[in-house]
Length: 452
Image 1 (tube, rainbow, N blue to C red):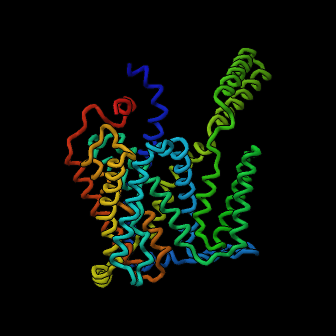
Image 2: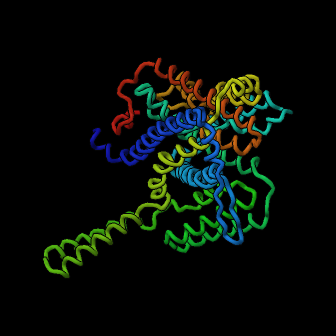
Image 3: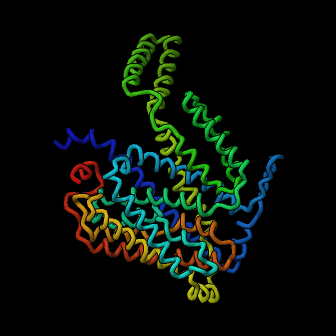
């Protein structure tokens, strides 16, 4: 029976496994980059760390002059690609994945909502009316890479359905963070540039509907839209999200048409091989090229882009972002200031207390009201432990810090709160998960995915 069912479930489980593997390995690189940044910033030549990321890079486009620091190019440019991939994941999950069915989506979406509201309220409890109150969005985010990495260390104690819950929660969390950035962390608007960005987004949609597939066209439009958004006052990374939501999720060619055309091409390939002539060899090569094109067109653009870009964001962009943002010169004065800073306490408390309480409380309310139900193989202790792991807020938290504060002291206080809070709640969550008994006949393989 297992072998008969395997083909049906394999396409569903394999993308999840690939995602988990990428995020786990990415979490290791993210941790290494963070360690390098902290060590570098605290070495005798640590001043070179700040000098590097403060170096200015100018691009003069006549109409627009982009004069940014290297760190800003990372945060505004490379992170636009990160948010583009996040947007692809959000669209896929909302239309085809864990967030597609309302009742199925209710638990992770409401849990994510609680995991954003309660940390923000806790932060404001420390900072309302103070100079740091604008940082309330910092402890709202969950770092998928670190969270998945911690779950991987828990091994077979975490059922597949709980990992799916965490991923769906983190994706809903990303959507909330994007909305917060777009609405609350936007500077003065330049309506002309915003209108230009909107026109470019509309052009992207129209070209997609017309079947235009040339990558160069879309890359040129994407850069122009990013530039317009950058100049509009809305953070440039939002351009990546909007473009992701406009990316087609349906393949250009259906599987039925693929099968019919592929059979004809296979016949052409065999005919060419049998001829053994130059013309026959050319026929075989042409058939192979056309078959490759058919295969590509039977996959959606969204799936192809996500598969191609996700390793780049996990293995390159996010580690570079951590290297550029996690370095803090930790001396007695910085630690002393952070120890008495409401910003540090608000961020750390938001992650350590707000995330677990918010996720667990809103999940409990959703289940009790009949809006959602726990997966069959998950109990409340496991969900509470995963809610702790979701308190690891690193990448997006650091990102929001750069948007919320310009005063270096507040930035350092927030970063130390993020590092301390994420490390503590991550360790506690892992210990709670490790204390649980290993699951029997459950895991991450295809067969184990069937049983769960």
